[in-house]
Image (cartoon, rainbow, N blue to C red):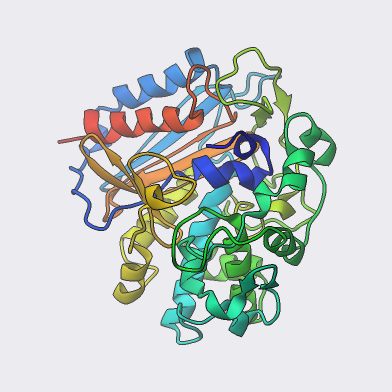
Length: 405
């Protein structure tokens, strides 16, 4: 993974790593975990503790849903200044898990007959993707969702990376962008490849997808997220923030960054709780909780949000390792959803990263056994992949250890 990915825009972090979620076409089924009331989860709790004591993270929290029972665990602190502990209702920025909500909304619109994934970007956003080697009439909505459009990632633009890498982030963290400005930055870079010929993760794809949701509905993305998911699923802590809302509404801890490599134990730690969410419009700006994310993914994987035809489209996977930039080992990507191959089988869901806040929500293909976890730091001492390595240990402990029958 490129160094710029680690410290570029908030969504740039999600870009190459914590979205690390991806999924295979015919995964092995995971065994269901035992009822949490019967004990267990010691292995998962040990992994949470290790994230703090060994990897040096401020804190980590996790919730497990298993066939009707719920377990919650934590370690470390939500606030380095006060020592405050995490609470299940604590909110955090979910990074690229935003993409799953946007993809689901677009697929719902297809099911409603308002668009098709074979529609072109030009059809819905005339003239927006044009020039510098781009032709929006040759890029489909499906190619946006599965990252095969070839559109460059605005978060990796050289100028943007320079302004948001390292300590420069502290001076630019409140800079605001409109969605169309983000698209302009993306297409200011030549296409990575011809549409449909390869794979490359690009936040610009989901800025465009979110704009299509707004164009097709006549409503803001925030309203569509609320009406389609937050209200019907009673996700009381999940929302798309306004562009000028630099804080987090409701209960939350603090979020920290070293503004550098994931595995550098000696770098100083900065509080980056407040920042502009406008960087992540449609691609990495939403706010939620571990409980709300579990509820959303249980509904999605359980078939309650999409008809079978659209769900089949969502889980039609691409192999990111075939792309020019590669991807996280043992993972695949569909339409805003992915899977990770563990030692005992496949888990499905999504992950996200933004400065100071990384999270994963993955589970069984039917959604009955889910784990949602979050850390309030964007590093992990001794781990080149940072929090991704921490999350992988948690998943192995829950789904392949005690949680495996």
